[in-house]
Image 1 (cartoon, rainbow, N blue to C red):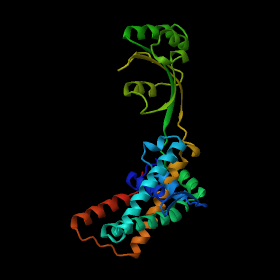
Image 2 (image 1 turned 90 degrees about the horizontal axis):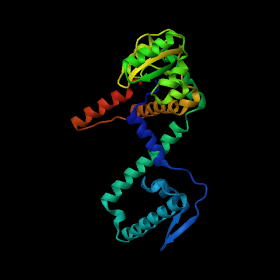
Image 3 (image 1 turned 90 degrees about the vertical axis):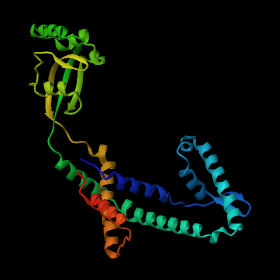
Length: 285
């Protein structure tokens, strides 16, 4: 459940980050000659700090970002004075950046901001309904080093001794103070030998022979068996929202592709592009 195309989702998330916030005020915070650094530019500089610098306290982050912004303004002023605004490389890069930012704004408006809470809840209900039923059990265990010790514990249980008290007294597991309680778990959480024995037991019973695993020898008691509850909406809402975002993004892209003819001259690139789009369009389990 709730798997997302990682490549597509990473792109979506990065697009949101690149767009950045909208600023109500744009006060000047510094001047470099005739060039000004505004609050919005400083905020963007802070948002795009190197990951290591982003861990700094807020005031230090502001200083680091301002220092970088001043350096940018200084060299940008020199570049403009040198006539580099007409340099072909600069023109190409600026066109790419402009296209990307327009893409990001459109993406935010028509994908991110267009997702409603009702859509997320409806998708959650759909995913929950498609989940296969799964049992979970609650078990206790007593872990010892040797098979002889485990057999002696089973004999004590047969004689009527209390499992919890035996766990507190004899188990080598750190959870002995809780009477060996492992809580509820589904298949795939424990080592195979332990799971096979535990899931095959009846509620209220204990293992009649020691269960050997890489950790030692176990005596297991099955406390309860029930159908596992699905994750609560609050626990997976953000993950479900990403699924809705993904589908909405694909709809927007497919409509845009339908309105334009795409031609890729290089045969290898064309095949790679088509394969990537086929994979992207496949339903995500």
